[in-house]
Amino acid sequence: MGYWARQRYQQSKHESSSMSKKELLERIEKVAARGVTIMTDWERSFLGSLRESANKWGRLTVKQHDTLQRIEKKTDPKNIAARKNWIESFTPAMREDLKFAAEYYLVNPPYFGDAARRILAEDDYVPTEKLYRKMVLNKYVQRALDNASQVPKFIVGTMAMVRNSQNVPFPSSKLRGKLVMIVECEDNVRSATKGSRKIKVLPVGDIETVETEERYLKKAKV
Image (cartoon, rainbow, N blue to C red; front, side):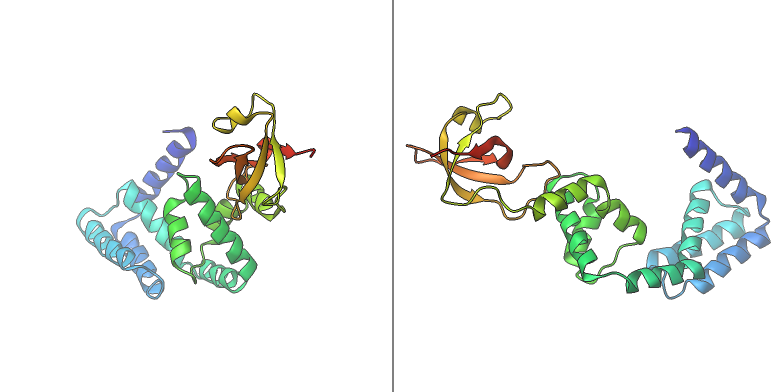
């Protein structure tokens, strides 16, 4: 456990043990009353189990207290108002970027897998502002968005040359310095790496295509 995790644990442990049984039960009831319309079934059931623990033991475990704090924050009127404002300000453009980010994470695991699947499955889903910022506004997704917005450098049916460089990986490495025809160009780029648009090429004099990326090709002088 790291330093800050230990600090949070000790703080939560202190808070959970410093309240009287009456104060604890009143706190749980207050949360339950104000969160009727926004709590999940699991959260309602959890608060019920907290009542039982508080009545029996007069205190909560650290994990129980941490979860209670999370539900308290969720049901705080100020946070509810902020959430409402966030949902109302969520634009179609932001949703497009969110769906792009979801596709990016599914193609490039393992982060945000569950959230990404929910975003793509539920058209009206609006994540929290915190989750949106983490998923969409990080430098990797922003680079991927920029890559996707770029016009393809090569047009299907035109000629190109595979770069004669040791950086060109297999299987296109066997074509270093050779002419190829552009057969297919990826439309939906989901990579943060510059020049990573996937391209299928047909080597001159061959009948089998090879998949490569834009960065490994250059304009052919023909």
